[in-house]
Image 1 (spheres, rainbow, N blue to C red):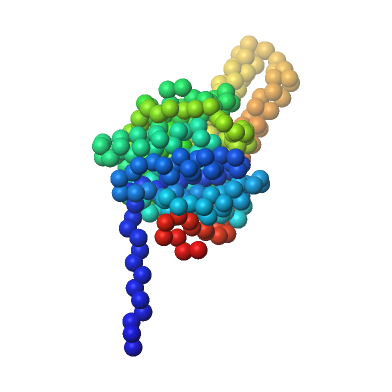
Image 2 (tube, one colour):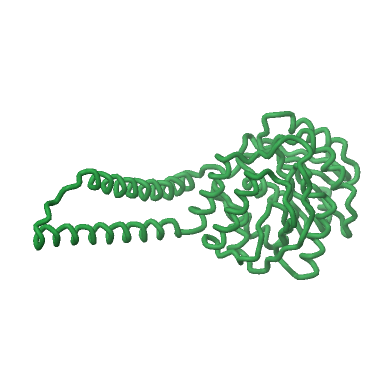
Length: 325
């Protein structure tokens, strides 16, 4: 009996570019065309992750994939919107390259800067290189959120103070495999990176104005991202709550001693219902905040134990050289 024919897997390319797609129907084609034209020794591939966009992004991406001829392209379709960081992890799991660059879909990161990240990572033997912007072309709201995130991450994630975190980054295949071990429903890519390696650097890259539409980051999404950073990767909020409780308890004790001394030794009558009610409101509010914080931790544990999915892939479509249609 003849043995079944052996199918050889194509060799792994040097580079995979992972791009999460959301409301990017107008930019996906020029972005992919620019990425296809990159000259990468050892070859490269593109992984697009459609993250449940409500517009025509999926159909636009399908047309790009079906018309691809120069480099392999893979389109992964999420069943609904799971968030940028979830989409990036999905893309990393489908990447075959020895190096992986993640970037946004809005063309604010010029595709040719991908080569700068790759060259810096290889020449300095780093597991991760972040793109560092001299001037940022985001809106003031997005810039403010980014500054706050970078400042807080120094305390919560032990980030080196001079390191700037951005979504434009180059990862080694080793680091990508390590962070893909995380299967929780609330991922934060930069937290996973900082937990996994100390070989991290940055290189200055250009940042251009947005060509189409507006940023998908709303206040709600930024708060959700901050919560993932605060709660999933640190117990610092619990420690701060403990310190706040101790300080308020000590302040209450001091006030009580002062009131008793004045009443017992100086005959000063106890009065001031307004201040009493204000104090009760402060203490009660602080307790509710602490209970809410503990509840958030417990809620995330509950959802994780109940296997809330990090992402659900509806379909995968491939295009480009060697693709089976």
